[in-house]
Image (cartoon, rainbow, N blue to C red; front, side, top):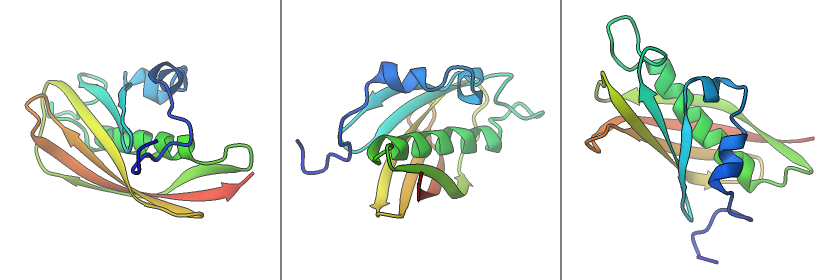
Length: 143
């Protein structure tokens, strides 16, 4: 096990993508694409489901991708028999607009405490240019 491994048991892409069935995540076609030692990555299309009326990637869609990544990553590192994780606050900083293609989000933990976690989620366009940066605070609650 790597020193920076955050997973107790590294989740599989199939298991992660199965979590999305019949949810907004599936509707927006968010797909998990990589699980690293200390990150979770997913993609989302920029299309009629994720743009605002001016044709730009909707800030809410960016927030959805960010919260999805951070929440699911958090879910995968806690003891789900005794606890559950929920988003407490999300802050999204929009840097660059996107009008087409696919965006990729990468979530990495900044703090993994017993009762709170802080995740940084960066979203990139197809040219690997930064689109947004989000901070997601998670609270860990007992079942």
